[in-house]
Amino acid sequence: MLTYNVRGENIEVTDAIRSYVEKRISKLNKFFESSVEAIAHVNLKVYQDKTAKVEVTIPLSYLTLRAEETSPDLYASVDLVTDKLERQVRKYKTKINRKSREKGFAPIDVAPEGTPAPTNTDEGEDDLAVVRTKRVSLKPMDSQEAILQMDMLGHNFFIFEDADTNGTSIVYKRRDGRYGLIETDE
Image 1 (cartoon, rainbow, N blue to C red):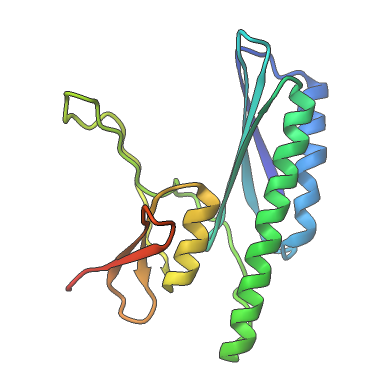
Image 2: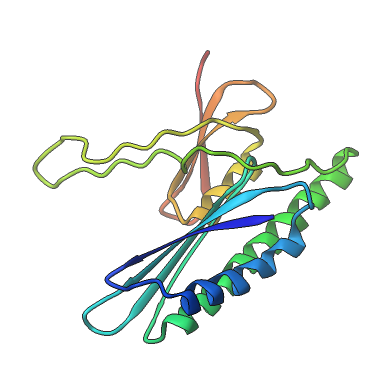
């Protein structure tokens, strides 16, 4: 079951807006086991040019769903984000179920997690000072699952614990559009 944390920037989150967001995002409940409880973090922003941006992040133990959309209408942005999240879940479930059948084990029940998304630091042009820090819990997975997670987050790299070696690994997107893997010696 999803619970909601709806915030607004430059906009007051009215009961009507909150109700609409919860109604639309609750469509995702049909994809999860009834035992799964997670928090959907929804951030609504309205800019001076009258566009509305909706960002939704749903952290789960083996997957972090994240989508954002900007359009002239707040409600349309909510609809677009919901559709994008639904496609992500379908893609993930299809890939995991196919992999489960190939390897001969039952799909893993997804449980909630309270940790933020993977580490991402921003550097200034002339300054090497760290301006943002995030913590990440490394989850055991294989490189294909890590690539899927990276693509869903829209990142260029993803850090994970290799399920086969128990070592820390990094997948990244190369300039040619293919993927690279960095493994550590431990």
